[in-house]
Length: 507
Image (cartoon, rainbow, N blue to C red; front, side, top):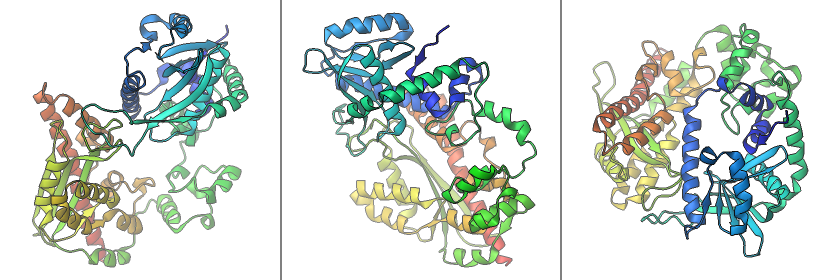
């Protein structure tokens, strides 16, 4: 029986033929991914706003395959072309291919149309160009006279004026000529994808970069389980090696297909890669205690350990903010008053789940907590904390001196750790979440429950804001989880600093 392929299936094929085959034949193997769902939610939000921006008169026609069914939408879409009104989620079919288009706008000519694919990214990506080329091919073959075809993305430089006025948020990149030039490519993709669809078994595709780009594949766990017997004896997979996909190693890996670090010659590895390789193969932590002494010597007391949590909105919520601007809504601050076992450790924090712009109250409290104090301010990857502090200082002139003084005192604990410490359990990562469990007496983040990483913290914040006025009990629960998570990050830095300080003292 001939199979129909949606635009989405063809994009999946472009990423990985096996992914498309599994989606068609074994969708039950798909694993839910909160990050993917969050991205889809943002896309739906941007799409809904785009409809109001592209049809400000409110005369657009919206199609719904869930309510009408695909066949009815295909038929009604063709009929609706005669109305010369903006069409949203209209469906078009040609042969074995079909697509639902974000927007189809009438042009000034009697039968011309402008196709617009709306994306929630700031720039046009390669897979979005593929997406538009597929749609343009289907529409042209279906008899739609395209005079323009564009990808609409978000202008990250645009500043929201407030009051619900979002004109200017989207920018359009016209790609009609490119899309027309790729029609033969689209036909080749279609033919190859249809052949894969009809195979009784999935195509053989080794796991690689396509498992995460351009999207995280929902079948990664399925493929990992299938590969497990072959990989069961590998204790040092090359995927744990930092930079294992660098150009220096790519030729060797392509030619020799190594699966373990043991198969990689040291001559091809950087000093860091060699450290990781030998620590992993020997199952022995590596510490450069002599190098730690000068790196830690310049710190000024008391020591402050600072961590921000921030949210980015594709569609800005507060006047004066830009799309994708990092909006800090929380911080945790541990302070170690002095060195030695008697040094007093204190903690304070800030969290705003009110739904109002959290930046000024956060900046005011931070300026009060740290602006007039002395001592080094330690962060783990201080580039982020520094960026947040600079943005707050630029926004609030009266707080700028205190915030800038805090930024000037920032010390980054991440490069210190990366240069002097590695434990095999880190599996090639220096994330604080990977490093902390390797320190004697410390445990990881698993016990925190639902909020145990940055993405979960953002989702908890969004849920808390949404429920702020309707479910105070749940908001309180989310607030406790958020505070516990952020406090864990700064407590982890304290534990790491103490451990490295102890190691350096024994050199």
